[in-house]
Length: 141
Image (tube, rainbow, N blue to C red; front, side, top):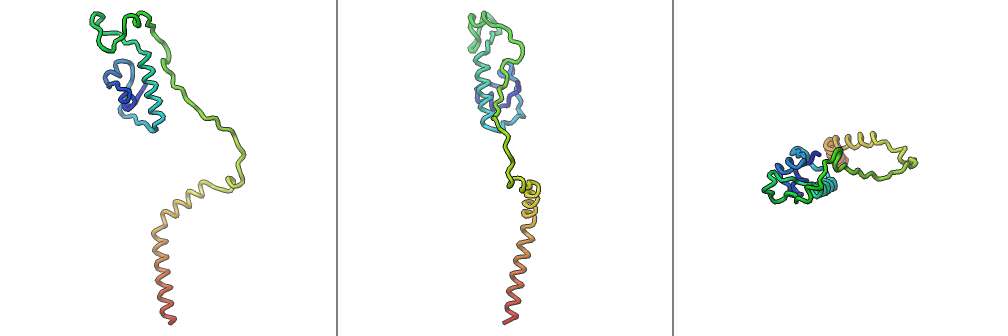
């Protein structure tokens, strides 16, 4: 399972330790939303709680290693250990309204882009037109 740096950091797992207990760490990965970050942190917590860590030396177990009773009941898991649970919101089909049929998303976007692009020239023309009106009024007097 590939995880970004923030998930294992929030779970208080060091990078080298994460690699040693079966968590792949990708430093280039970014979390795009807080919800996915929290979901990944919860998955890591659950993974770590289920993990049975055997000591390197049976005679000298270190802090964080599993007890002898846990190691006796350990079995090798095959297949996906913790599959990702996707939650989908149920959306139902609805009838398109007449207002939505009249509205063209492409045309709306093109007009918005044109308005943004032409703001400066339109201001300049309005300013020149106002000056011309001012000059023509002075000539009439």
